[in-house]
Length: 191
Image 1 (cartoon, rainbow, N blue to C red):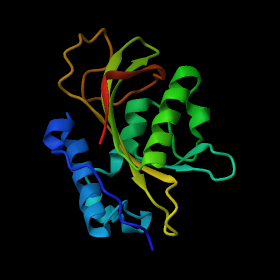
Image 2: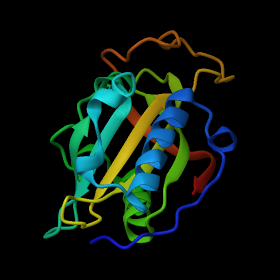
Image 3: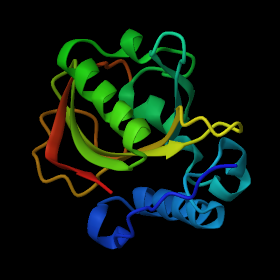
Image 4: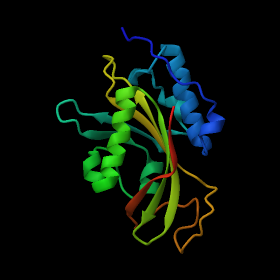
């Protein structure tokens, strides 16, 4: 049986910019309250997440190698990132400082059982720019192992930066690749 774990109880209105992130975290929080700690993968009901599914990802830390593997990455994430993450290892998608930073956040979520919200700046190959909010939350496998991260990635529509000839806000990324991720455009928040 899983041991109950205390969870932070901050008001989502004070943490998140995106309503998608707020709804996602509220869903996870309800599951955590019902479970008395970190939810299990089996607790997730996709039917209750239909509007959020395009923005959700599930990452597993592979026990033998310590590598992070994307079990699922929604279509909305593919549209924002310009590539498919599902069935890829994190180190196939990111390199250098970006890989180190994201891996450290994943390890913190799993190791400490905390959620992490960050605001990331994405620079694309055509030099356009977009801000996204990413929420990473711990999730346990059915046997209780804390090796999964349930996450959500959404655009921040109130970006005040000028649009340097990139895609109009709200459109999908086409024929562009993310070439740099500016981690922590705003301070990261663990909760």
